[in-house]
Image (cartoon, rainbow, N blue to C red):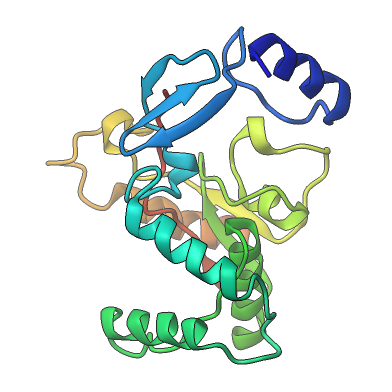
Length: 217
């Protein structure tokens, strides 16, 4: 299919909640390394990285080989049955992570991971309130959108209660108009103020993203 055919079928058969960037949406065909190609054969340098999922580039030969090998053996076993790759990955992560971070809980998406993290924190602490950061993105479920502090991704009106948002320590465009060499602990002070003034003081979790900015093609 060419570009116009793909866009026409997208509009006809997919829900309109699919967000397409650009005035003329860009149907992609394939990728290799740092680059992706559209269906018309144009090449682009990819700064988007599959929403931060293709950390070793597109179509990496070793990744393709391992995926093909596993699909040829078994596509899905669920967590009801142990599998060598499952435990091997958990073991490798335990070797890389410090201190008591020695066990893993694998999920299907960032949304599910954030939901699980909040549930675990609430169960462990017995508290319910969560502090997140402004301009953060946590996912598309009801809870994850409530954790998200960006109007583009907060859909559906009322959000889940018990979540407040503090300033994001974004030195490039500091929300307090300060300089990183002299600001001291201004952002940390804001978090403390948010806890003291907008919560009961009994916090289940504080959520922050390591990477807060996405690029594009």
